[in-house]
Length: 91
Image (cartoon, rainbow, N blue to C red; front, side, top):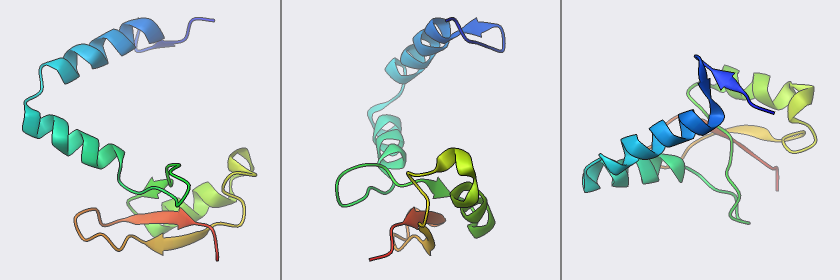
């Protein structure tokens, strides 16, 4: 199945993304890497991350995100450089 976004196939979009990353400076790549690794769970999987608590609650309550995020609680990120909120499993 070919998915188009803004008249681009997924393959074309991936190619454009790769070209953009290749043109980035080492500093820009480091910033992108940090943003991509914003917050991970103990098992290494990514936590869902949000700019507001309301977005996080809506995401966690959406049945399309179950069972992965079902029962997760909204937590303000403790890393000051990231800010925002993520979902965590209650301990």
